[in-house]
Length: 474
Image (cartoon, rainbow, N blue to C red; front, side, top):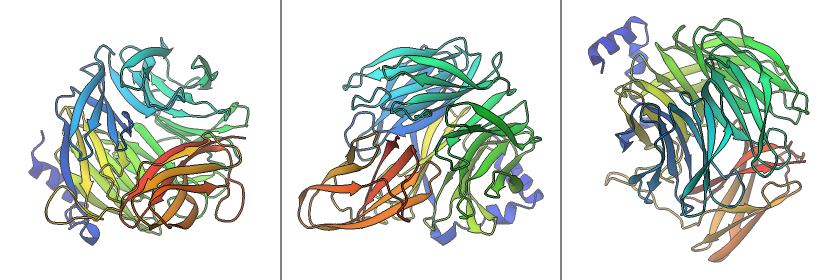
């Protein structure tokens, strides 16, 4: 653990101290909670309702412990660790998703030591059977699960360094038999990964970066999963993580990246034709991870970042015009490594999850933007709404959302694309308690059919939000 006086002094020396040490914007602050404190070299983190009980559980990996685990949420954010695998050498990144589309959540993990990507099949009672997607992958690093070829099943996209140094995707035949394909055969130290329809032509492109190649790249999908490489930044030293979203609200997707050697968080402004201009968000020694989300609810995407060197988790408030104001979430998470953002406590605001490699900690930071339900200082009155499901999913022309309400209430259905951009909002009224259905016809707010891809939905009442994921296919 580093001395806090040295840390603050270093920040002030960089000219950031006065900003970083100010009170949280709009009174917003975060309360730190330990999910798991014995995950040796805590590395990957993701969320999913693993046991299907209506609350959000946490999936995580421990690289030195060789562990893949999920943490069962009792509904009040008390977590119980359930080990899925304790023999996966160098377990690195993870994902919770219904890979075989049988109605329960499976777990996918990549292992840098074993050089494999494994999926763990959930039998519906949270007994997991491992299946190998690929082996001999060198230092397997990051994974994303997405329907890359838009054929209705879920594929896996991955980065691997070491002997591989590549960006690959693994095509699912619908029966969870996977065929490997190359996106980029050589990206030195390939680590950071994101998938999005960057050029908005209806197919999913790939963004990646290499910590030793010192480059940020994007790969244009021609619609048949043949990828053309384009450079976003040819000289970003130690580039290790990427994310994409519409930061400046101009209708196209920008890219955010962290660089541990240049000690920077940067964003790359898209001119609408995928020509990118780099801007510095912050000087952040040992910048290690980035995530985009609207932390303060002002309809602008903010940036959450982690610092290896300073043991810090921060968020950078997007105030518009390319200006980002930094705020500390935590300055004592030893070797802060990986991030995830979700409304973990279902109180209507976004919380932050992080792993600390040397702290061996998996933590979540509870936002008080709407309210903290666990203490007596502020409460939220939650309107009763059950977990939401939608059918069909994947969908081609339409889908219907199903859930129950405890009493008559107003509802808002919001649809987001994979970058977090709001594409459709509709307001409804449930006239009585009981089963309620909402219909979406695949249209955006302008009356145009949305392109195929992954979308997220939120059904919001005055006091709660239920969220989920769906695939749109042609």
